Each structure stands twice: as C-alpha cells, then as structure tokens.
Amino acid sequence: MGSTRLWGNNDRHHFNWGVITQVEGKRSPRFSPIFDSARGLFWNTDEEGLRKQEGRMNEYLDRYTRECYPMIGWDGLDNPNHFEVIRKIIEHFPSYQPTLHKLALLDLPKNVEKLLAAEFEGLFSSRRKKFIVSCLRKRLEQYADVVTK
Picture 1 (cartoon, helix red, strand yellow):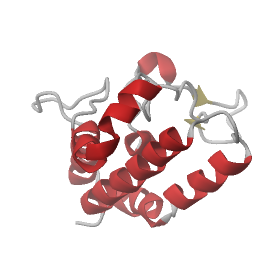
Picture 2 (spheres, one colour):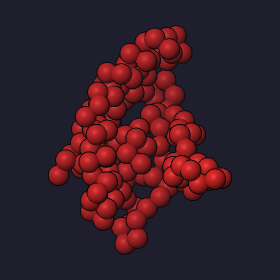
Picture 3 (cartoon, one colour):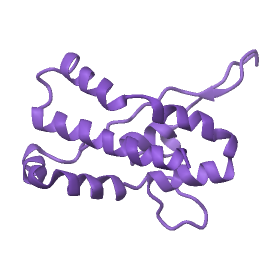
Picture 4 (cartoon, one colour):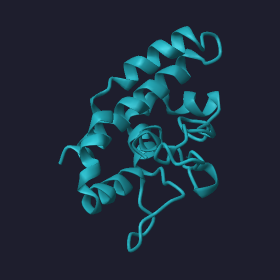
C-alpha cells in the first residue's frame, strides 16, 4: 500500500491484488509482488504536455500529487487521495505505522534517478526523467508527513 501511494498508481483495485498461499500451510499467506504499476508517474502525459508544464513544474506537481485518487477508498471518506488512505490506515491500524514509516526513510528519488540513467537510458526524455524524479521527491515528502505524525 505504501509504495503504491508513492508513485500514485490509480489503478490498484481488487483485480490487481494477489495473495500467495502455500497449499500445505507451512508459510503464512502474503501479498504477491506489485504488478500492473504502469498507471502512475505521467503515464497519460505526452512530451508536449510535460513541456507545457515545465515552467510551472512545482505548481503542476503539487496538483498532480494532491489530486491523484486511488480506486480504493475508505468508508465515510468521500474520494480520498492516496495520502488520506494511508492516514486512515495508520489511524485505524496503528501497528502498521512502523512498517509504513520505513518506506519514508528510503532515498527512492535518488535510486530511481540512477535506475533511469542506467537501465532505461534512451527510453525517456531528460524532461520526463526530471518530472518523474521531482514527482517522487514531492510524493515522498507528502508520504513522510503522513506516516511520521
């Protein structure tokens, strides 16, 4: 849940969740690795759209991160964004807070920047890389605000 909130995947729904179980029951059930994560980080914004926002990137990213809504919600909360869902999880299940907090300690933007430069060189424009890393940095700040309070 925490990682999905960081990159703003708005396509995480019950068909995209998997639980791995062992038939003999020797190991506890656990969530499968994340899959179908293509629906975040400007998947629906072309290069021209990014170019138009470049001069006002900070304002654009503020809105982009604040107005990104997951397909899951919370009873009694009308259309919560990703961070409001995490806030509710911590409020109702405080034992999850330490685990969710660990994700806030990682330097994901720096690691993603390295990954984009190495593994995906030539596949993303420098503008798109800048937007992705800046967005992750902003999301991580917002996420950290939620999980550290």
